[in-house]
Image: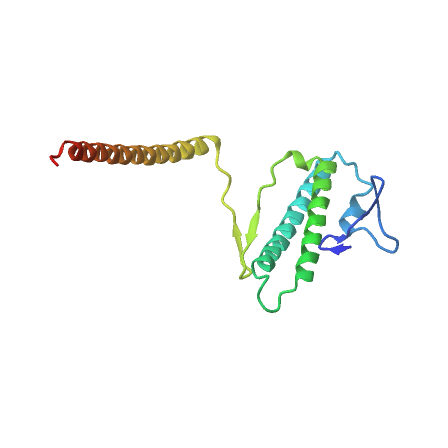
Length: 173
């Protein structure tokens, strides 16, 4: 199967084999003899995973667009199905790379996001623990105030209903 990463490995009883006549990507060839525990190898694995994640995001957006526009003229369910199969294989390959390289123990933070018009936009850095705590506290405060307003409104409606019902029960007939 051909995908954005080259040829997908053929699996036989838990082993990975390259199909005959196909070569491994140049990056893999250069690093084959390298010690897998070196910092350079680890950095290279991180870069490869980042690139693969970006490719997965692009394909996932394309698949999502194909699914959302499935009933419009010109969209082929066969093409969408092939993209979904490729996406599943790409996710499997990245998962295996994460497991084998040790990179999977780290969060994969986005470096830059490519917009539809071709420009790149840097993602904001992740929030620190103090910032997350402040953000969560502010969000909880807003939710608590909304709940209080809702309870006060329900209480007022209940008292009006009770007052109205009591007034009708005491009214002369």
